Image (tube, rainbow, N blue to C red):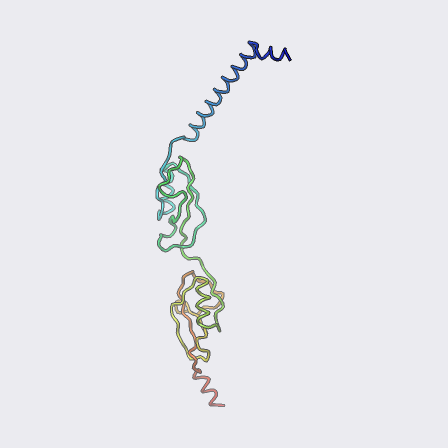
Length: 195
């Protein structure tokens, strides 16, 4: 035990301890300098506003600002933005970021996605309208024909053409419902008279 305490007081141990402290300080200083240079400490770039830019224009602006980018999946179509333009970005415009930071973009698709026309034949006008709204279609007009079922849907039209349940239409399409007015069709009366 006495030899151990004598070694701790020896000149050799104190020199080695001093050298170890100097090497540690030099290493910590070197690592801090390397981190400062490699992370561009204190250097920031302001993120530009990319909204409504085309993807090609966005690429040029990103490269000019010294940033990187990634395009995420397209969102739902937004008619307020041009087709294939930027509708969202993360981080937001005006945010201060490091050089070479990745910016994430959401692009406006070319149009509304298509939805399936639900089974609304022989359904009341009110229920049919609710079912259509639920999938993203709008009733533009209701036309009545002589059919016994009052307010019952007999046909569905889109841009003047008959459509069937299961057909695909762009979301927000305006369709026409052909419903019964509660009157018996003339043909049915003629047929009954002839019997």
